[in-house]
Amino acid sequence: MTASLAIRPATEQDVPLILAFIRGLAEYEKLAHEVVATEAGLRETLFGDMPRASVLIAEWQGQPAGFALWFYNYSTFLARPGIYLEDLYVEPDYRGRGIGLALLRELATIADREGCSRIDWAVLDWNRSAIDFYRKIGAEGMDEWTTFRLTGAALEKLANRD
Image (cartoon, rainbow, N blue to C red; front, side):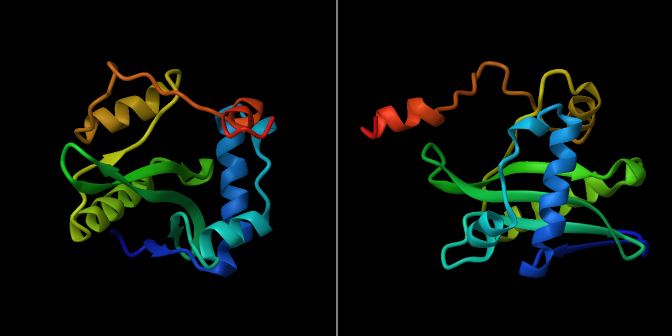
């Protein structure tokens, strides 16, 4: 990490910044219409009585430049925890400075320290620059797996809430 770059754990005071990063990522992914997150929701799920995820903040020369939001998962085959990287985002003005790599390095350090067996994440198939970057650092695409999602009315129906 250069003297210009610092990576730190987010605090509750960072909630507005985290929401701004989430909205920036959603814009980049052309999914801004799907963001319903609020500061109150983030405050509860990230810093409440039962935090569900953790956030790292990247600062370039003291200015917020990006974030990584992650949580623990578990591999039954390995009988070890892992980390799922939900979001990795660097503001457009700060890209190309190694900030994304620094966030991933910090996450890898956490995974190693916590005895995690792996870090998993998803990337949109059209995001060629991200895919190339991930392959360059040694990540492998899991092309034989298909991601599924249960949400909204289908989730409620399965939970017998229909």
